[in-house]
Length: 160
Image (tube, rainbow, N blue to C red; front, side, top):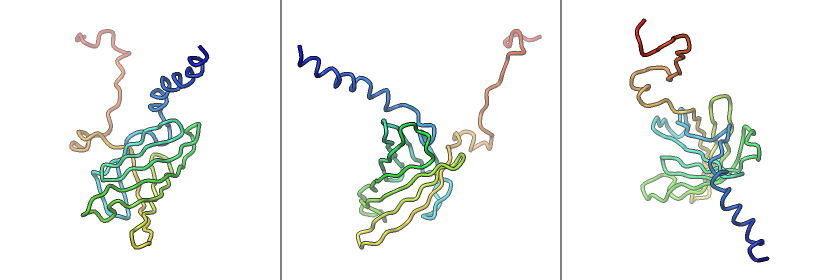
């Protein structure tokens, strides 16, 4: 019986961890699209940030990933962490480790990545991200979709 009681906190933590993994972080959580970088323009470069308790995982579609530390409340406009580029023989930063800092300024996410090269030098990559515009709106040049209220209509499906 005492063995069962000792394992209860472990079972409870296992049940609650998926809930905290998807808790929204109002500062960094979600998808971001690159809008500027000193490493070259990339309109298709996206990152996804997911909160896991006090840690945030960052995955980029151009070959890097990182883990950054979040504050407990999720309100700090900055965060730091470490990551690594994928191992690709043809890539400039293949398998290179880096340290990075995130700073939220208004609706933009600024990233400073310090990449360590094999020759011992460190290169600074600066990038700016914003929330991605839905693809269909980009093609048509339309503003973001907003909700339309029908509260003033008695029967929106019937003509007057």
